[in-house]
Image 1 (cartoon, rainbow, N blue to C red):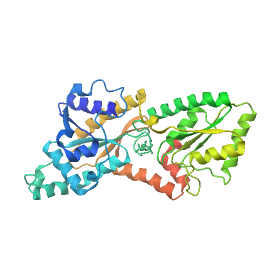
Image 2: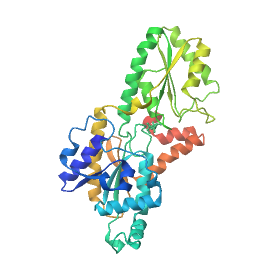
Image 3: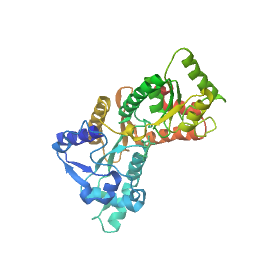
Image 4: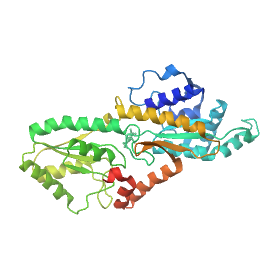
Length: 351
Ligand code: F6P
């Protein structure tokens, strides 16, 4: 995300604008004051190689309330900020959409309450560009979300490391990876590391006795001399009936049926940290640059967009569409319509 922050700040300044950072996400937006800081060109120097975000992030209960969002509008107007780049996942971008939708009413309420000088029409409507910052790669609007490639590298490095022990001891390992309801990291991590089996939320095993089938694959691998066996489990994996498939369950199944010790590694937050990959740095830079350029072309009332990368091209998707299509995948998974879920995830995932 730092590459995106840097690009947004520097593009704005290069275009003659002022750039402000809002620290701690929506919490800072609601609290105002010290959370708003004007950034110079040099404030974003030397951050490309740093993981996470130098401006912090936080969940905000206040922003979920109308009063909180009204305060956020007041803080933005008091700083004369009418262009906002939001970098975040599904939750942050949903919040951005709500803020945009309510903006005219909240301004009118602030004028009514005497917090802003009237008339309400004198205040431009907020323009928003969203960048998807999420390791999960779970949102419509970009083939890759900022952070996903780095997390994938962490996962593949970890599996490679585990493979050494697995091969030396002829052991099976179950590796659990993050991703919430999205199987991207598990699927691509398994593919890149040559794992034996992978379990993801969008495409549960389509046979009743998948446990037998999985153990057969592991057994056959051993029979032809394969020394390491790796099963990757997405944290949101489930069976055809929607019941979670946990890494612990998979471990027990393999242990019982193969009659050998099986180890589980839950990769956890190591996947979310560390220095970003070159791809992620450049993705953040390109999208940050285009987000600012896009905002400059907008007239006041246009819908917010998600700036992403689709088919190797920078793309601009209406935020509402990106959110709806993202939700549609979750709905399909919940309804156990797995073919539809895979279809909605798009060709690269499905193929
Ligand atoms: O959305 C990113 C993510 O890392 C998910 O993959 C994971 O389920 C979740 O966040 C973990 O959240 P927390 O850090 O709050 O435990």
